[in-house]
Each structure stands twice: as C-alpha cells, then as structure tokens.
Length: 82
Image (cartoon, rainbow, N blue to C red; front, side, top):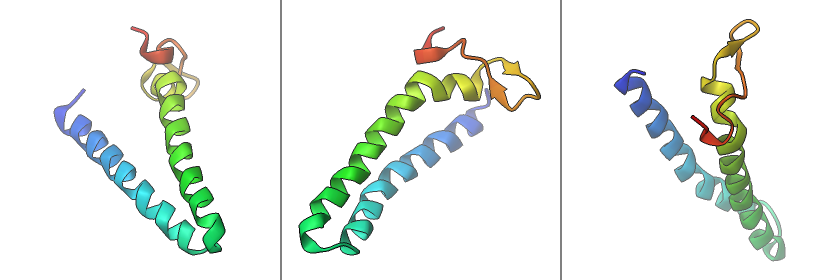
C-alpha cells in the first residue's frame, strides 16, 4: 500500500468522524425541542454501529482478495484476521 493512499483514507475517516456531531446538531435543530436529544443520540449510535460493521466486514470486503469482477473482496479478513 502506498503511504499517500493510506494518509488520504485516514484523513477522510477523520473528517467523517468530525462531520457526525455537526450533522447530529443539524438534524437536532430540525425537530421539536423534546426530540432533539433523541436525534443526537441516533446520529452517534449510528456512528458506533458503522464502526463495528467496518471492523467486522467492511475491511475484508474492501481490501480482501478480489472475487468476481474485482468489485468486492472475499471474507478472508473478517474482524481484521490476518
């Protein structure tokens, strides 16, 4: 892997992590006051769920050995195995 590509992916992931609280406050401002906390919590919980799914399956599908037309990887690295 190229160092510049790795840096780009890490910076992109960090920007998404910073975007999530801003998006939560944006969505919280569009609902009634009593629903704002619920909207904030849903945004943060979805960030946690997506992070766990990336560790379990996403990494393997993105960086595993190609299957098919090279669009998906195999599940050989599920849970960062190997």
